Length: 429
Image (cartoon, rainbow, N blue to C red; front, side):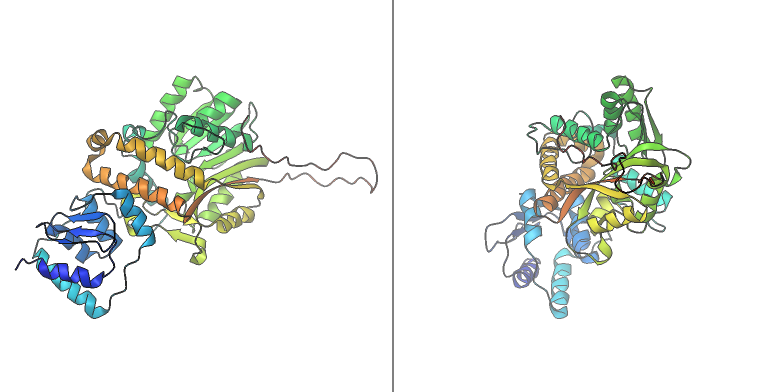
């Protein structure tokens, strides 16, 4: 009798309703009880990963190593969002583990994949944040260029107004941000988490602003400087590698933070808002664009799952909208506009996934097979989170109130009308 027979029976008993087929390394199978994808376990080493780290992390390790494969990655992502494994008793878990161990045999402990990061030290120190950010972004500029548009904009695009191409949708998003910030020629803008410089270059070229962009990734800053020179705005744009907590005596008329707040963390979000307030002129505006979690969570924060924390966004934390608003209110800001773009992000991720799939060979050459598998999984999982309503992306526009004193004109006297804040244009002209 093949050694995998006990494992096959264990799978059948543990999952009597199976919207998937499992095929083992010796060709034996546990068929689906209804239509679904096929998961191929290519080696007993995959069982070792699952036994040492049951659940998401073990599955992720086995997949990244190539020990597990699937015939329909989109189908598996969708399935994980709607199917829940039935609970097993302790006795069932022990029997299942024993049959899996017999099927896999005894093997030397496999190290985690090289693409896995588990940074030491306390969360959200400057050193650890820099290490986590670089793990994600320093794969290579060329790698990101495989799926981003020509502006190298790595955040949600704006499709709602009829943009057909990713390039048009990203330019529409950049223009929307500048309009919301009410940028005028000669104003100084800070771009926190500037990426490859798309917003800074757009603000300088189209609105005449002087922009200071900061990032924790030196390769990003280098390419951003090159792109600013090519756009002819190097005299108005400066990119620095620095932490937002190191801002000191600088002063700006506007601040933008696009897709960066996810790296801040709930423990630092109040300091983050206070730091922005400390460098923003009275009457200035800040636009914070970030992913939030929609499901109710304790303390208003959702820390990414084990797979995401080890392979994609180490230490990433998604706050809910109310916690983010609270931080800015505590820092003395007045909220002007809140806008949800989650359907736009789902469409953006569809474009990124399609582009990435068109360049798999080049992606593997640049980043290796493990990173290739991480990104194929991540882009789909991110899209699914927006399509199913687990996550959203909000643009939160706030202003720092003016500090001038109240006028003392008598009641009923003719005087200048109270200053009214005009809501930002929703659609760029």
